[in-house]
Image (cartoon, rainbow, N blue to C red; front, side, top):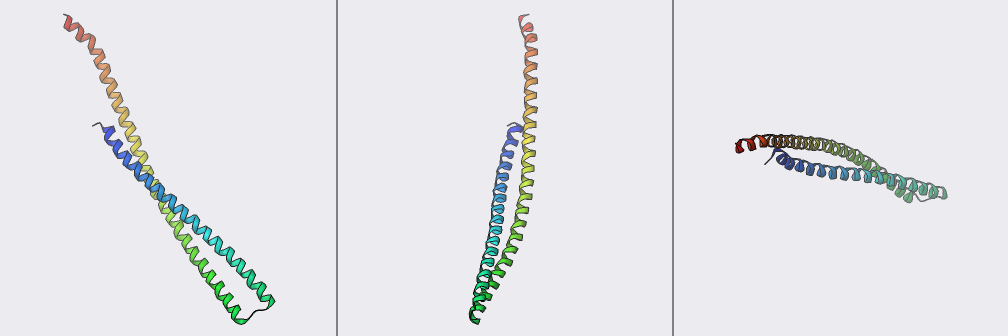
Length: 146
């Protein structure tokens, strides 16, 4: 088996690893985008709930209802803080996935370059061999006719 063929197998394995790393990167990017969307939804929900609380408060409300509103708003605030932590974590995961993909991609490129270099060397060697045979043929024909 030629070197280029052996390295082609290794290059295909590297490409497979690169594709897996790309899928992982895509998944981490999607998760990060979802986390950002959830945070924006929570913030919007908080704004709407605060408006409702203000409107109901201006109309007058029972103390128990006011405590319920405040408790619920505190819950939303806690959810926002937790979601911000999720965003930081998913951002870190995105960065790690990107670095991993870049490393694997670099190895794949090196393997592809190596395969191409070996193919070129093999082709050049084959061309030289054929040229040598072509150059030797008239010499052999002359010797056999003598």
